[in-house]
Image (cartoon, rainbow, N blue to C red; front, top):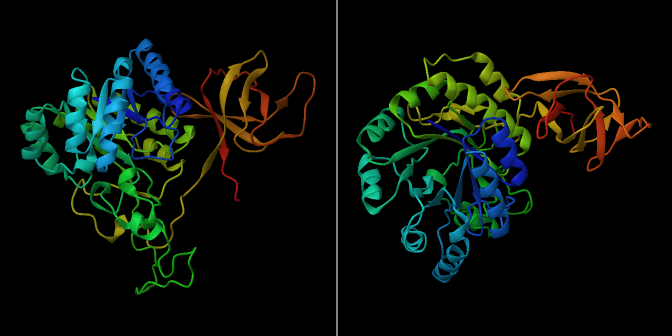
Length: 396
């Protein structure tokens, strides 16, 4: 069973691989994450070369629902990237599917969760049309998953972690209606996360709703977490388990990859759930966790009615860019003060705590600002390029 991680940019791609992902997915010109660090054709070539040199795979998301003028642009784009050797292209629209089959006849095509596949009949039809893999809708229950995997002639991929959309597998018009940003073109404003009495940027435009003691965040779903179910998914025969989050940080990418790597490896023999896995996942930004539709139809406990904010226990300090005789060099992602307690995130997802000591040659400054390139003493802790430095989150 493949562990598939998000790669919002090249740095996150390297983080995902270092911490245990078998494959990554990333966007190009027609991705549903318009504000992610989507890859240019030149960057795609570099990324795919990096992946293939390490025996890993990279899948390109081409999962928008295009307008008529965009179809010609998609065909032109595919001609440009055809020689790059993507290991798969993820599509949602049947017109795009046909174009990919024509322009990239040897490239595996995966059917996006946006296509809302919730039954074996749909999976079988996509397979007959030439799809290699179907990524099931997140509204699919455990019972249905088992039947679909059993009956489907193609591979089945399952989302196991990350944000859940209030609309059916992301097929949403709310963002376009309220903010002029079309979710199905990759520009979702996450209108479901807003506080609904009045939209905050238009305080005079009130919406008619009722408010109770839970607050007014009516549509704000908790995040999906199926870490306890990895053994079941392996036993069912899922081809791939997928982590959502191309817009999230290297810290999120590292922790999710490291934790789910351990779970997937455990499932290779006899799955044994480790409660520490969930605690590690709770250390990164989340909206609290739910199993969503997996066990049954979710109720109000799957929603965050009281707040739209992330739970944020730790924050990214930096990614190790170079080992030095004294320790490591990083570009600060947050201010660091000498004497701060920080930690190195091991490849197993554990923390090794150290006291921050900032080194510039023979100088020892008291602090380093966000964006500053500095050397930090590692006090004998073994590190390697790409490892994560973090600390407890500071209130802003």
